[in-house]
Length: 307
Image 1 (cartoon, rainbow, N blue to C red):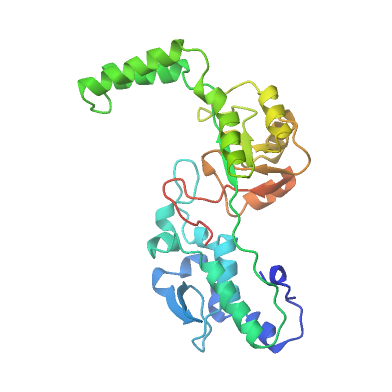
Image 2: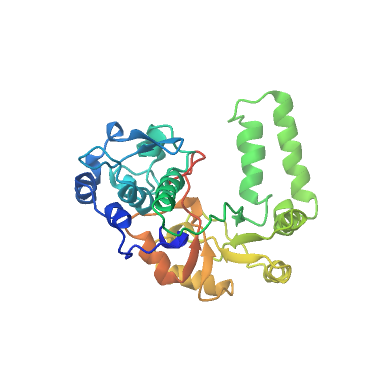
Protein backbone atom coordinates (compact mmCIF):
# COMPACT_ATOMS: atom_id res chain seq x y z
CA UNK A 1 0.00 0.00 0.00
CA UNK A 2 2.81 2.42 0.88
CA UNK A 3 5.29 1.38 -1.79
CA UNK A 4 2.65 1.79 -4.47
CA UNK A 5 2.50 5.47 -3.56
CA UNK A 6 6.25 6.04 -3.47
CA UNK A 7 6.55 5.68 0.31
CA UNK A 8 8.86 3.21 2.00
CA UNK A 9 7.70 1.28 5.11
CA UNK A 10 11.34 1.41 6.24
CA UNK A 11 11.50 5.21 6.02
CA UNK A 12 12.80 6.88 9.18
CA UNK A 13 9.85 9.19 9.61
CA UNK A 14 7.75 9.47 12.79
CA UNK A 15 4.45 9.38 10.89
CA UNK A 16 5.26 6.17 9.04
CA UNK A 17 6.66 4.60 12.20
CA UNK A 18 3.42 5.42 14.02
CA UNK A 19 1.36 3.77 11.27
CA UNK A 20 3.27 0.51 11.65
CA UNK A 21 2.78 0.10 15.39
CA UNK A 22 0.25 -2.75 15.72
CA UNK A 23 -2.69 -2.16 18.00
CA UNK A 24 -3.55 -4.54 20.82
CA UNK A 25 -6.74 -5.29 18.85
CA UNK A 26 -4.76 -6.39 15.80
CA UNK A 27 -2.50 -8.68 17.87
CA UNK A 28 -5.59 -10.34 19.37
CA UNK A 29 -7.27 -10.79 16.01
CA UNK A 30 -4.16 -12.30 14.38
CA UNK A 31 -4.24 -14.98 17.09
CA UNK A 32 -8.00 -15.48 17.10
CA UNK A 33 -9.97 -13.94 14.19
CA UNK A 34 -13.29 -15.05 15.70
CA UNK A 35 -12.84 -12.43 18.44
CA UNK A 36 -13.84 -9.69 16.01
CA UNK A 37 -17.59 -9.03 15.98
CA UNK A 38 -19.85 -6.63 14.03
CA UNK A 39 -19.81 -4.33 17.09
CA UNK A 40 -16.05 -3.81 16.60
CA UNK A 41 -16.62 -2.33 13.14
CA UNK A 42 -17.01 1.34 14.05
CA UNK A 43 -17.22 4.50 11.89
CA UNK A 44 -14.34 6.92 11.55
CA UNK A 45 -14.36 10.26 9.74
CA UNK A 46 -11.29 11.87 8.19
CA UNK A 47 -10.72 14.35 5.37
CA UNK A 48 -14.40 14.54 4.54
CA UNK A 49 -14.99 10.78 4.26
CA UNK A 50 -16.57 8.35 6.69
CA UNK A 51 -15.90 4.62 6.71
CA UNK A 52 -16.11 1.67 9.07
CA UNK A 53 -12.84 0.46 10.64
CA UNK A 54 -12.43 -2.94 12.35
CA UNK A 55 -9.24 -2.42 14.39
CA UNK A 56 -8.53 0.38 16.88
CA UNK A 57 -5.69 1.51 19.12
CA UNK A 58 -6.30 1.76 22.86
CA UNK A 59 -6.23 5.59 22.60
CA UNK A 60 -9.28 5.50 20.32
CA UNK A 61 -7.47 6.11 17.03
CA UNK A 62 -8.00 3.73 14.10
CA UNK A 63 -5.34 1.15 13.27
CA UNK A 64 -5.52 1.71 9.51
CA UNK A 65 -2.53 -0.40 8.43
CA UNK A 66 -3.71 -3.29 10.60
CA UNK A 67 -7.22 -2.90 9.17
CA UNK A 68 -5.90 -2.98 5.61
CA UNK A 69 -4.09 -6.22 6.40
CA UNK A 70 -7.21 -7.65 8.03
CA UNK A 71 -9.32 -7.15 4.89
CA UNK A 72 -6.74 -7.99 2.22
CA UNK A 73 -5.35 -11.08 3.95
CA UNK A 74 -8.78 -12.66 4.29
CA UNK A 75 -8.67 -12.93 8.08
CA UNK A 76 -12.34 -11.99 8.05
CA UNK A 77 -13.08 -15.36 6.45
CA UNK A 78 -11.48 -17.14 9.41
CA UNK A 79 -13.94 -15.71 11.93
CA UNK A 80 -16.00 -18.87 11.43
CA UNK A 81 -15.34 -22.36 10.11
CA UNK A 82 -18.74 -22.55 8.42
CA UNK A 83 -18.44 -23.32 4.69
CA UNK A 84 -20.90 -24.09 1.89
CA UNK A 85 -21.16 -27.32 -0.11
CA UNK A 86 -18.20 -26.27 -2.29
CA UNK A 87 -15.96 -25.50 0.70
CA UNK A 88 -16.27 -21.74 0.19
CA UNK A 89 -16.49 -19.07 2.87
CA UNK A 90 -20.09 -17.88 3.01
CA UNK A 91 -20.93 -14.27 2.22
CA UNK A 92 -23.44 -14.17 5.08
CA UNK A 93 -20.54 -14.62 7.55
CA UNK A 94 -18.57 -11.65 6.18
CA UNK A 95 -18.34 -8.49 8.28
CA UNK A 96 -18.52 -6.53 5.02
CA UNK A 97 -21.86 -8.13 4.17
CA UNK A 98 -23.22 -7.98 7.71
CA UNK A 99 -22.40 -4.26 7.98
CA UNK A 100 -23.82 -3.41 4.55
CA UNK A 101 -20.41 -2.31 3.25
CA UNK A 102 -19.86 -4.92 0.54
CA UNK A 103 -19.85 -2.29 -2.22
CA UNK A 104 -17.66 0.22 -0.36
CA UNK A 105 -13.90 -0.06 -1.11
CA UNK A 106 -12.76 0.46 2.49
CA UNK A 107 -9.06 -0.14 1.78
CA UNK A 108 -9.07 2.63 -0.83
CA UNK A 109 -10.56 5.02 1.72
CA UNK A 110 -7.99 4.08 4.39
CA UNK A 111 -5.24 4.61 1.83
CA UNK A 112 -6.54 8.06 0.92
CA UNK A 113 -6.58 9.04 4.58
CA UNK A 114 -2.99 7.90 5.09
CA UNK A 115 -1.69 9.58 1.94
CA UNK A 116 -3.42 12.85 2.79
CA UNK A 117 -1.74 12.79 6.20
CA UNK A 118 1.58 11.99 4.53
CA UNK A 119 1.32 14.99 2.21
CA UNK A 120 0.41 17.23 5.15
CA UNK A 121 3.57 15.99 6.91
CA UNK A 122 5.70 17.00 3.92
CA UNK A 123 6.29 13.50 2.52
CA UNK A 124 6.54 13.03 -1.22
CA UNK A 125 3.59 10.95 -2.43
CA UNK A 126 3.06 9.76 -5.99
CA UNK A 127 -0.27 10.62 -7.61
CA UNK A 128 -2.89 7.91 -7.86
CA UNK A 129 -3.45 6.44 -11.30
CA UNK A 130 -7.12 5.62 -10.71
CA UNK A 131 -9.18 2.59 -11.55
CA UNK A 132 -8.79 0.34 -14.60
CA UNK A 133 -11.58 -1.81 -16.00
CA UNK A 134 -10.52 -5.31 -17.07
CA UNK A 135 -13.01 -7.56 -18.88
CA UNK A 136 -12.59 -11.23 -17.94
CA UNK A 137 -14.63 -14.13 -19.33
CA UNK A 138 -14.98 -17.64 -17.90
CA UNK A 139 -15.56 -20.09 -20.74
CA UNK A 140 -17.44 -22.83 -18.89
CA UNK A 141 -18.78 -24.51 -22.02
CA UNK A 142 -18.47 -24.20 -25.79
CA UNK A 143 -21.78 -25.92 -26.61
CA UNK A 144 -25.10 -24.64 -25.33
CA UNK A 145 -27.38 -27.36 -26.63
CA UNK A 146 -25.80 -30.42 -25.06
CA UNK A 147 -27.91 -33.55 -24.38
CA UNK A 148 -28.16 -32.72 -20.67
CA UNK A 149 -29.33 -29.16 -21.38
CA UNK A 150 -31.90 -30.33 -23.93
CA UNK A 151 -33.26 -32.86 -21.41
CA UNK A 152 -33.44 -30.14 -18.74
CA UNK A 153 -35.27 -27.69 -21.01
CA UNK A 154 -37.60 -30.19 -22.71
CA UNK A 155 -38.13 -32.91 -20.10
CA UNK A 156 -37.68 -31.30 -16.69
CA UNK A 157 -38.80 -27.72 -17.35
CA UNK A 158 -40.99 -28.19 -20.42
CA UNK A 159 -43.04 -31.31 -19.70
CA UNK A 160 -42.49 -31.75 -15.94
CA UNK A 161 -42.81 -27.96 -15.41
CA UNK A 162 -40.24 -27.77 -12.59
CA UNK A 163 -40.31 -23.95 -12.74
CA UNK A 164 -44.10 -23.65 -12.57
CA UNK A 165 -44.39 -21.75 -15.86
CA UNK A 166 -47.47 -21.17 -17.96
CA UNK A 167 -48.31 -23.40 -20.91
CA UNK A 168 -47.21 -20.70 -23.35
CA UNK A 169 -43.83 -20.26 -21.64
CA UNK A 170 -43.24 -24.00 -21.61
CA UNK A 171 -44.08 -24.30 -25.31
CA UNK A 172 -41.60 -21.51 -26.11
CA UNK A 173 -38.95 -23.20 -23.98
CA UNK A 174 -39.37 -26.56 -25.72
CA UNK A 175 -39.43 -24.94 -29.17
CA UNK A 176 -36.25 -23.01 -28.40
CA UNK A 177 -34.45 -26.16 -27.26
CA UNK A 178 -35.50 -28.10 -30.35
CA UNK A 179 -34.60 -25.22 -32.64
CA UNK A 180 -31.22 -24.77 -30.95
CA UNK A 181 -30.44 -28.46 -31.15
CA UNK A 182 -30.87 -28.60 -34.93
CA UNK A 183 -29.59 -25.15 -35.92
CA UNK A 184 -25.92 -24.97 -37.06
CA UNK A 185 -23.62 -22.55 -35.24
CA UNK A 186 -23.88 -22.98 -31.49
CA UNK A 187 -24.00 -19.56 -29.72
CA UNK A 188 -21.58 -20.68 -27.01
CA UNK A 189 -18.95 -21.65 -29.60
CA UNK A 190 -19.21 -18.22 -31.21
CA UNK A 191 -19.31 -16.22 -27.98
CA UNK A 192 -15.53 -15.85 -27.28
CA UNK A 193 -14.88 -14.10 -30.58
CA UNK A 194 -18.06 -12.03 -30.22
CA UNK A 195 -16.99 -10.92 -26.73
CA UNK A 196 -13.55 -10.04 -28.12
CA UNK A 197 -15.18 -7.85 -30.77
CA UNK A 198 -17.18 -6.00 -28.10
CA UNK A 199 -14.00 -5.27 -26.11
CA UNK A 200 -12.23 -4.07 -29.25
CA UNK A 201 -15.13 -1.75 -30.08
CA UNK A 202 -14.59 -0.13 -26.67
CA UNK A 203 -10.87 0.28 -27.35
CA UNK A 204 -9.66 -2.53 -25.11
CA UNK A 205 -8.87 -6.21 -24.85
CA UNK A 206 -10.17 -8.97 -22.62
CA UNK A 207 -8.90 -11.98 -20.72
CA UNK A 208 -10.48 -15.29 -21.71
CA UNK A 209 -10.25 -18.07 -19.13
CA UNK A 210 -10.67 -21.50 -20.75
CA UNK A 211 -11.10 -24.96 -19.24
CA UNK A 212 -8.66 -27.74 -20.06
CA UNK A 213 -10.06 -30.59 -17.99
CA UNK A 214 -13.24 -31.83 -16.31
CA UNK A 215 -12.57 -33.67 -13.07
CA UNK A 216 -15.96 -33.38 -11.37
CA UNK A 217 -19.70 -33.28 -11.98
CA UNK A 218 -19.49 -29.48 -11.85
CA UNK A 219 -17.41 -29.31 -15.04
CA UNK A 220 -18.37 -29.50 -18.70
CA UNK A 221 -15.71 -31.19 -20.82
CA UNK A 222 -14.94 -29.68 -24.23
CA UNK A 223 -12.07 -30.08 -26.71
CA UNK A 224 -9.42 -27.40 -26.43
CA UNK A 225 -10.36 -24.88 -29.16
CA UNK A 226 -6.88 -24.27 -30.57
CA UNK A 227 -8.18 -22.23 -33.50
CA UNK A 228 -10.15 -19.91 -31.23
CA UNK A 229 -7.20 -19.56 -28.85
CA UNK A 230 -4.94 -18.63 -31.76
CA UNK A 231 -7.42 -16.07 -33.09
CA UNK A 232 -7.86 -14.42 -29.70
CA UNK A 233 -4.11 -14.26 -29.10
CA UNK A 234 -3.58 -12.85 -32.57
CA UNK A 235 -6.04 -10.07 -31.83
CA UNK A 236 -4.17 -9.12 -28.65
CA UNK A 237 -6.39 -10.76 -26.05
CA UNK A 238 -5.06 -12.67 -23.06
CA UNK A 239 -5.67 -16.39 -22.52
CA UNK A 240 -5.87 -17.73 -18.98
CA UNK A 241 -7.05 -20.77 -17.06
CA UNK A 242 -10.49 -21.56 -15.66
CA UNK A 243 -9.63 -24.86 -13.99
CA UNK A 244 -11.64 -27.91 -13.19
CA UNK A 245 -13.66 -27.62 -9.99
CA UNK A 246 -11.45 -30.24 -8.30
CA UNK A 247 -8.18 -28.54 -9.30
CA UNK A 248 -8.43 -25.28 -7.36
CA UNK A 249 -6.23 -26.56 -4.50
CA UNK A 250 -3.98 -28.89 -6.55
CA UNK A 251 -0.90 -27.08 -7.96
CA UNK A 252 0.14 -30.01 -10.16
CA UNK A 253 -3.32 -30.25 -11.72
CA UNK A 254 -3.40 -26.49 -12.28
CA UNK A 255 -0.01 -26.56 -14.00
CA UNK A 256 -1.04 -29.56 -16.11
CA UNK A 257 -4.20 -27.81 -17.29
CA UNK A 258 -2.26 -24.62 -18.02
CA UNK A 259 0.18 -26.60 -20.18
CA UNK A 260 -2.73 -28.03 -22.18
CA UNK A 261 -3.77 -24.49 -23.05
CA UNK A 262 -0.21 -23.57 -24.01
CA UNK A 263 0.09 -21.00 -21.24
CA UNK A 264 3.45 -19.54 -20.22
CA UNK A 265 5.06 -19.97 -16.81
CA UNK A 266 3.04 -17.02 -15.50
CA UNK A 267 -0.64 -16.77 -16.37
CA UNK A 268 -4.05 -15.42 -15.34
CA UNK A 269 -6.61 -17.57 -13.52
CA UNK A 270 -10.03 -17.65 -11.90
CA UNK A 271 -11.21 -20.74 -10.05
CA UNK A 272 -14.39 -22.50 -11.17
CA UNK A 273 -17.29 -21.75 -8.79
CA UNK A 274 -15.01 -19.11 -7.20
CA UNK A 275 -13.46 -21.72 -4.91
CA UNK A 276 -10.78 -20.18 -2.69
CA UNK A 277 -9.25 -21.18 0.64
CA UNK A 278 -7.81 -18.27 2.62
CA UNK A 279 -5.04 -20.34 4.19
CA UNK A 280 -4.06 -22.61 1.28
CA UNK A 281 -4.89 -20.87 -1.99
CA UNK A 282 -2.19 -18.15 -2.01
CA UNK A 283 0.57 -20.77 -1.83
CA UNK A 284 -1.15 -23.08 -4.31
CA UNK A 285 -1.58 -20.31 -6.86
CA UNK A 286 2.00 -19.12 -6.46
CA UNK A 287 3.44 -22.62 -6.92
CA UNK A 288 1.27 -23.15 -9.99
CA UNK A 289 2.71 -20.14 -11.82
CA UNK A 290 -0.41 -17.98 -11.54
CA UNK A 291 0.49 -14.29 -11.70
CA UNK A 292 -3.02 -12.78 -11.71
CA UNK A 293 -5.97 -14.32 -9.88
CA UNK A 294 -9.48 -12.86 -10.10
CA UNK A 295 -11.28 -15.47 -8.00
CA UNK A 296 -12.00 -13.14 -5.09
CA UNK A 297 -15.66 -12.31 -5.42
CA UNK A 298 -18.82 -13.67 -3.85
CA UNK A 299 -20.74 -16.43 -5.60
CA UNK A 300 -24.17 -15.19 -4.52
CA UNK A 301 -23.98 -11.40 -4.56
CA UNK A 302 -22.09 -8.43 -5.95
CA UNK A 303 -19.51 -6.55 -3.93
CA UNK A 304 -15.98 -6.67 -2.55
CA UNK A 305 -14.83 -9.84 -0.84
CA UNK A 306 -11.55 -8.25 0.25
CA UNK A 307 -12.67 -4.62 0.64
